Each structure stands twice: as C-alpha cells, then as structure tokens.
Length: 249
Image (cartoon, rainbow, N blue to C red):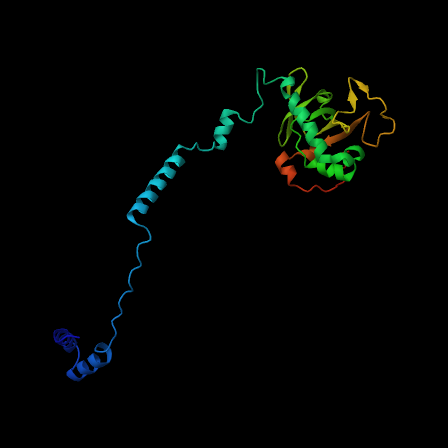
C-alpha cells in the first residue's frame, strides 16, 4: 500500500479509535488483507455478425408466429356450427353419408377381427363398447317412446346423449339414447372382401343355416342399450366397462 493510502487509512481509523488500537487494527485487518480481483471476463460467445443473424432469425420467427392463424375457441366453433349436422342442401342426403357407412363397415370388421365377427362373445362386446359409431347404420328396435321404433339410418353424430341419424328419406332424426335400444348389422366379409350377400341373394356354396350365434343370414347383429352408452365416443375409447345387472332389462 502506498504511503499516501496508508496515511489516509490511519487518519480514518484515528477518528474512532485510540492510537494503539489504530496500529493494531491496521496491522491485523488492513495491511496484509488480500485484494480479490474479479476474474477475467470470458470472451463474448457471439460476434457482432452472429448477433445480427440471431436477431434477424428471431424477428422472422416472431413474424411467422403473428401470421399463423390462431385456433378457434369453443365459442367460435359453436357460433360457426362446425359440429352441427348440415341443415339443408346436398350435404343432408343419405347418399352423401353412404361412403362413410362403407368406411365404417371396414373399420368395424378390422376392430372385431374374423374370430369375434363370426363368434361374438365377451371379447367382441368389449371391442364394440370402445368403438366409434360415426357412420354406423342403426335401427331403433325398442324405445320408451313408441314413435321412435323403426327409425333406421346412418349415424351422423354420436354425442353423449343422442344419436343424430340420417334416414333414407333424407330426414335427420335426433334419437335420445335413454330408454332406447339400437340394432346394428354388420355383413360378414368373405376372404375376397365382399359381403356375405350379393345382389340380394346368398352366394353359392354358403351355408347360412349353420351360422354362429349373433349372426343372422350372413350378418353379425348386436344391440346397443342406449342408457349404458351415454358417453362420447372419445370417452368410451378410454373407459373400461364392467358387467352389471340391469334391473330394467
């Protein structure tokens, strides 16, 4: 420490301490006290050119994010009617949804497999409960409202409490699931991919008299109890159903 700095330090200490204390404090705590210097700063990670490039890239990314359309909110989707069945026009015709039904038949055959499709049973029931029924052709066979019995058509929308069905007369019916039993028929697919009946008659060599239980004239037939089906299709896919005794059946 320089003589000038030492004199200034002793002068400051003498203002609050006696001369012996000044000598002791200076010798013990100040004279040989190390001065810790900050370590050398690391070199800059990026050069000016790299910084400008990063700024341009960030600006481009922010602009692309601003131009990206935002997803619609639930209120906007309801206002636009994206989940409503078509009210009028060509979209509200049975023929429009016929390809969807054909697609669903292939889907349900793949879900069930050849064994469950021809034999039924508990495994088939478990697969059917988690299946999607958009495009299935259903028929009301029992209902608490007699006027609904006989309604048959393709499921356009499978909501939690109702099936929206388009009939062959191009009429959209909203059938509540509560108190209703729906029947679904799936034609058995042959090895060549065609259904069990062709042109309204059985194929030659096909014995329909010895079909397993659950099949009817070359079709796999099952009933859906609507009260036990009051779930959305996405909720049914992740739900494990358990067998219960139903007193109302």
